[in-house]
Image 1 (cartoon, each protein chain N blue to C red):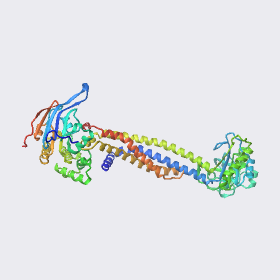
Image 2: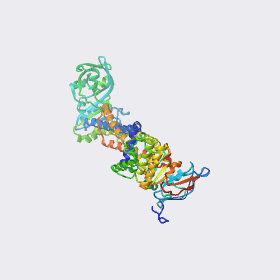
Image 3: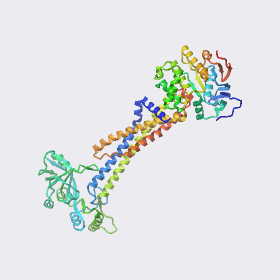
Image 4: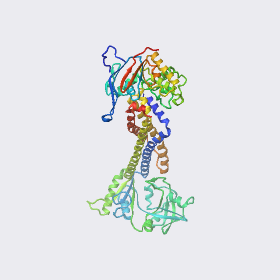
Length: 240
Length: 400
């Protein structure tokens, strides 16, 4: 699975000439029209752009949920576009954590069980699972809320549970799809500070889609998508 | 992984208890029906062979015609002198009796009862091992004279006399009165649904003269002195009857001799076939139950599309999701299998009571029904589970 890197040190993530086409014939739609992107370990990248600009498609490809129609996606030098569905699932399992706009917690399931969920698929034993999930919930400031189900939590708290679930496996990359899209500005700020902290203190690489410039300001690099291409890239700024 | 999948399955089942129960109802009924049919069938088979063996293994029944059951199929009936000839010429017979039956209405006071009136000779009591609880059997003189005397079976006594003492009373059968001289001990058993106690026994000659109005003897019941001599006795009997009925060498017998073992085999063979047929019909309902599970699992997969998307995104492999839904289906069907077996135990115990057959718990059929219900879970659960596992995580996550 480990293809030898061409450059001295392969980037964590490398997209080269990635296109994505949906449908075929007259109904065909080109969501990505040749995207090149290189992300190093430890970056905090905000992906911006209007709806339909291809940013969500790019995130799905980066999250190994989808594959490019043409082009190359290397994750630590591994050609993701050559992996089958199961191998991509294994890569997700090993390296990626996901946060969604709608939190996507399992309903009627406690915060602790939600946070434990990814560990169940990694063969972690019960007591160990519990310990790790408690630690993750404490890292997002939810100690004392372990027994609450999503319906008993505020939006901000639900998103914290989702973050705890994403980081419980200690992922290399955290993919966040509009994580503050459903939250008010106060809660959004809390969530963004939490994400910035995880990036700073744990060195977790974060790729975040947002269309709010205030939220993008928390990231150290902004990339703007327009019409399936990267229109602008700020490069890595030094943290404020 | 397996245990956590099982826990997930149980949680999913508990989350919607009413639907879960309705889902497995088909399997419950199917399993219960199969087990009940087989259990009752086995009980009936045992009951039949038990009754036949209570007759003794050395009983022969001779009938005109070649097939078993009532009616001679055109072959001439026997006569009293055939019975005498058998007694006189065939060796090692313990009892020989001509038998002629007719159904008739018997009346006592204001009570009446329709029953089988059986004309027989004194040795009949020996051959059929009939015992009396009261009174006596008819005397040789009564038999010779064709006197209207009778011995009642328990059912007839109950219907006509209730708590009254029947001995010495006169009952009316068709146009003649008949004195009750004895009462049979209840056999308490039914053979192929026929109550063995629903009988009135009378001298053969009385039945011939007053009921059937002919000299015909419907059948001959013979007890061989020694079971080991049965085959020999049958051969001698055949030889004698062929001679007396003037059957040419190249012609088939126009009478049949069956012993109790043959009857037992034929009857239990019939019950066994019936059992198989009923079980097969019941198995169809089990199949329908399986389709019910598939139906609900498909609905469940659609409902839980987003959950499946979440699981796929956070690290579940295709086979994890497949296993989760498969185990859920199997847990449901196994649960149905256990409930069905319990229901079958109750139903067949109750039915055995009502139908008066022994209740025999058969662990093999219970185990088989359980295994089949699990197999149905795997078979009908696989398609919905595969559909869940193959969902596109992006689509599934977007699903509301």
